[in-house]
Structures are given as structure tokens and as C-alpha cells.
Length: 334
Picture (cartoon, helix red, strand yellow):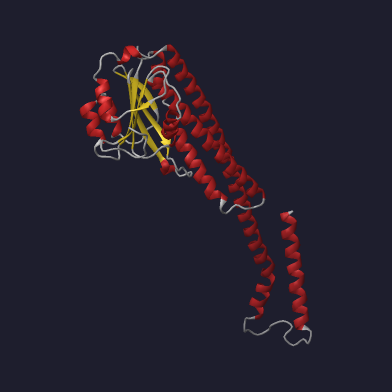
């Protein structure tokens, strides 16, 4: 089977047969079944990787009918997106890995799930949507990279996922830098929405992509017997590197939170300035309003009504009162 894009009639996107010291060779589903019925694959150190698209309705029935996969694997397929976990299920590894879509654009909806079932001679992966990390793993296999065991493939996938997350964090940090520069130039209106979106994406990535500590600790402490010690050590290192990326994402979240608080303070300050301006206008207009209110009453005995300088006197009194009110107001402001 030649490497191709898109699933075949059984939902298989790609399949590879790995032998010690050799790159993976493409293999079809029927060939994989013939190979799995053999009796000496494990002794030769060979294993198979089959990658399926669950968007094809034929994929799950074919997996149930032809492969010896644990019930927990099929149960996980219908549980929806959950936090990343890696656990031992009856001497097989069940991995639920959340990854970003291939064309990721900082949208929380572009996070999807990849399910894996791993034993000593078979790794089965399945997904609904194209994902970036698994595509990088496929590319590495196509380029001739060698893998000694299914756990090595899983470790490579976790490392690719950590690299993808690190790139997302770097891109987010660049966006935050631009927003921070805009904040210094009083461009707040659009940056508040962008910061909120970035923070939501990072929070969801951290919640979904971070491996569950309890399940991972149990696996590293009591791994299946068939996992080699070197593979176990590589798996431990990959999880530690992934934890560093998660901490970087958490630090960037705190930085975004501080910027949001600073923006909120800036908005409050602008609101206060606006209210102060309105208050000043009201205070300065108060003497005029009071004077016009008094002189607008149609009653007898209005002062200065017979004086030829009445208007000038009234204007002078109003002006003096306005200046006094302005002096008191701005004095309190200072």
C-alpha cells in the first residue's frame, strides 16, 4: 500500500510494519490481519501501527471484529473529549490524547481527541479530525525514522504534541507582546477581546493536554511487563518535558491575567475621567442655571429690573460664582 491521504474503505488512514533496524513499511488492513495471525512476530521484534479515521462509519466495526482491543478503548471513543491520560488496562496501554487541529488558529473548538491502544506488537490510533501531532508522526515514519517498539512511537507522539504546544505558547506570547505594546499606545478596544480569547485557549489546552498525574504515576510505577526499561525511561522524560511546556503555558496565562487587570484599571480610570468631566460641566453650569431660574420667575419685585446696568451686574455675579466654583472643584481634584 502506497502512502496516501484519506482513509480507505475500512477507515484506515495509514498502516506501517516495523522491523528492528528498519524504517516502517506500508501495510494494508488485510496484510496486517495476516501478519497478526503469525506466531513469531514478537520474537523477531516486529510490530504494526494502524491509524484510523473514526469519521468513516466502517472503522469502528472493523476494529471490533478484527482486532483484540480492550473494551475500555471502545468506551473511551464515546466519552468525548477528556483530559489526556495514559493508563494500563489489562496489560495494554490505553491513551487518550487531546491535540490541536491541523489548521489551528487559536480557537478553543479546534481541539480534538486521539485514542490509542498499545501492546507489544500493535499500536492502534483513531481520531475524528485531522490532528497536527499525529500528522507529524506520520511524516517522521515516511521519512524513514526507525522505531524499536510501539511505546517508542507513543513517546515520539507525546514529544510531537509537546512541540506543537510549545509552538502555540510561543505564538501566543508573540501576540501578547503585540497587545502589550498596543496597551502602551492606548489601543485597548480590540486587545481586550483578543486577550480573552488567548486566555480561554491556553486554559483549555492546559486542562485537556496535561496528562492526568495519578494515572501516569501508576503507569510509571507499575508498567506492563512487556515495556522495556529504555522505553519506560523515554516515556518518563517525555512527560517531564511536557510538564515544562504546561508550566510555560500557565505562566503565560498569569501574564495575560495581569494585562487584563491593567486594561480593566485603565478602563476604570477613563470612566472616572469621563464622570469627572461631566461633574465639572454640571458644577460650572450651576450658577447660570440658578440665576436663570430665579430671573425666569414671573413675579413682582425682581431685583435690578429698573436698573440700566442690571444685565451687566447679573453677568458679573454669575461669572464670579462660576469662577469660584471652578476653583473649588479643581482644587479638590488636585
